[in-house]
Length: 265
Picture 1 (spheres, helix red, strand yellow):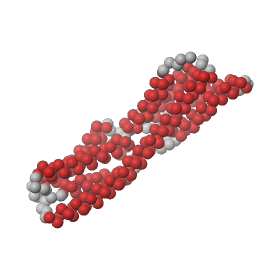
Picture 2: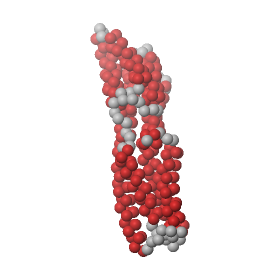
Picture 3: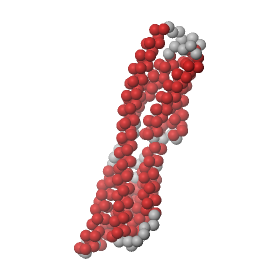
Picture 4: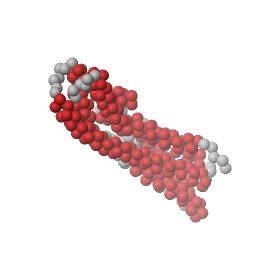
């Protein structure tokens, strides 16, 4: 259920995150203002203490979630960055070793990056990577396997090609590291507890006795509800499919654009 929610468009995630607390607050504020919920001076101190405790617990848990989710997302982006950086190095080294081979290798790399974006970035791939992206990757490896066999009997050429072949070995490790790493996601139980604390904080503020002016009560209650909703929507945004796909797609696009720049001999 949480994964399905995170797949929603960003505007819908924000709307739900802010709308739910606001809808909960409105009837309680109206009841307080219409004096349907009686209170005395002692209620204020008690509710303020409860609000402070719940608010502190919510803030601490929220900070824990944000740090963990952000770290997971940064780690995921770094693994892709390592892979794309190695691909760039392979193109550069191949061009230095054999300019005639470079265009073919570039075409295979661009095809592979397109499959990575389409099948492993824009959608959640299975463990170990998507078979279609894996097939494109294997075609790239076959080209360098053929190169390694071609220079096997020529000591000079083999030494020149060694740098390229080492980068290819690093590329294999980079891809394995990326596709075998678990994607950063929100823990369902931790998220549920955080949501409950957020709603309790909003509800406690709404139950505080009305001040001398009605509009102040509305500002207090709706302000807390909107602020809590916006903060929760930020957490959901960082963990959402849209955020992950956008950041990783930009990395891939950067490499593609760099490869499209004509090189000057």
